[in-house]
Structures are given as structure tokens and as C-alpha cells.
Length: 258
Image (cartoon, rainbow, N blue to C red; front, side, top):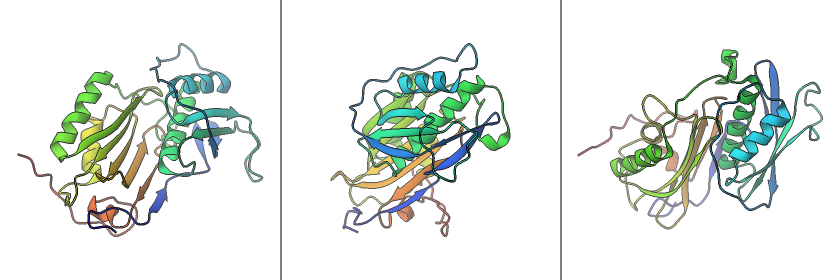
């Protein structure tokens, strides 16, 4: 690791790459592939008036995910040999990101959660689904931007990039720059709580921490409709930011506030 905490290698802890998710008795599956389409602008969506077919739901989610690395979502694409034959199979294609990285994983499960929710029209389903039917009552984008700014100030960070998505409610993709030689007195989960609000008002968040030189230190993504996400980090950065991933837990840290 460099003197400033910059990465020389990276560990990846992914919650899902190829998997199945149940929404209201319907299973959805996806694989990650790479595309090359340029992103466009995103627009929020409203609640559907009726349950949608899988094709209708996918079309709506694709419109909502314009401006992201999600290039396409294909229905009924070729399945792995051991995949079930009686479920809709979704293939999510990406442009400009590692198709097996945290960004693609987060967008993948976020999109699939939105497709499942549109097909169920937000009706409550089994607890095992992790979230179809949940309502997060997201505030306006301006309120979310203000919250991100306040979090950056509180934690001594600089906002590098912010994208607000609208799969159903809002989801936040934010990158922060961490000053050199900063010994964090906070954890990634504490930063996430400040980003998402209390009570939580977003259906997912992807938080990325960079060095001032632009090197990615840590990526942590969660989605609440599916309960899935991913984590990757450069050597030592999981301990630096208290990222819990099944290894020995780090000591609790307290945020130092003025």
C-alpha cells in the first residue's frame, strides 16, 4: 500500500454475480455482460397503475436507468446449463464498468428489484424477497443532494461524483475523495447512515471512496428490495474504514464532531 493509503491490489467481496431472486412467487435471474453504449440522462418514474408484464417492467426500468452503465436488460436470453427452465431469465448488459465489479453488481440487483416490484405493483411478498412491496418515501433530489453535502462536511470528505437513480424510489451512487493520510474516526456504515438518512429514505446506495490521486480505495453497495450488494477494497482499506465482510470485526469507532 502507498503511504497515502493508495491501493496496490484489491479484494472483492460480492453478494451476488449470478443468482436467483424471488418476487411474489416469480423468480428472476441475471448474468453480467459488457456493452459499449454511451449513457444518457435519467428521469424518475411513478408507481404503476397496474401490474406489469416482465417485458413492460424491463422497458420501464431501462428508461429509469438511462444515464447509468446499464446498457440493456434482455428477457429470455440464453441461460446457464443448470438454470431453472420455468422462470423469466434477465441478462443485464453494461457499458464502461467491470461487469463483475461492485458497480455492476449493485446496478444489477437494483434493476431486478425494480422489475420485480413493478410486476407485483408493490404488493407485499414473502419476507425472503428482501423488499418487494417496500415504500421508502424518498424526498426530492434537491433534499438528497443537500444531505450528501452535509455528510461530506461532517466526515471531512469531498464529493467527487453524485448520481441519483429512480428505480422506484430513489437510490444514491456517490463517490467521495478522502484526504491523504486521513485516519478515519468513522466507519463506512456510519457514512452510509448519513447518506441514506434516518429513517432510511432510499432503496439503495453505492458509496465509493477515492484517494486525492483518483485511486479507488473502497466500494460498498447495498440494495434493500433484494437485500443484496457487494464490497471491494484495496489492501488495508477495509480495516481503515471498518468495512465488515465476514472477517474479524474492527473496534468500534466514534465520529468526532465539532
